[in-house]
Length: 182
Image (spheres, helix red, strand yellow):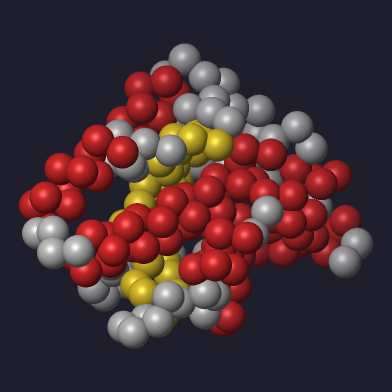
């Protein structure tokens, strides 16, 4: 795919996002944020009943063209391919950057990989919750454990319940190079 086609794809996904909104009965709604520029994405994931596989994904978010288009593209692919949890875990951030175009993403890889990092965190949470329930833990016990261990980071990206607040707190001082460029 040439540069102009990739730019057109990103703009189309930004202006007409696919799978934006909250799905019915998500197993997890995982927020993620990029404090460096103020991007926020929440990935809503419902897993297949008896399989370690994604049944449905949607997203909500606000931020730059790259972060929001990447979330739309990722949600579209996940809904089409119904990735296994292992496939999500194996996805590399470099693949996401290559898909969007490293020449377009340039110096903003965190914007391009926020949705993928958030999806990975969501899948890990589903796996953890399933294992804990199988071990006999209640939802309340799981929530307490999650609060203690759910913080994950990839570079300066943040995931989990405090992600949106942290991004908004730091966004007041951050300047984003192209928030309204594309």
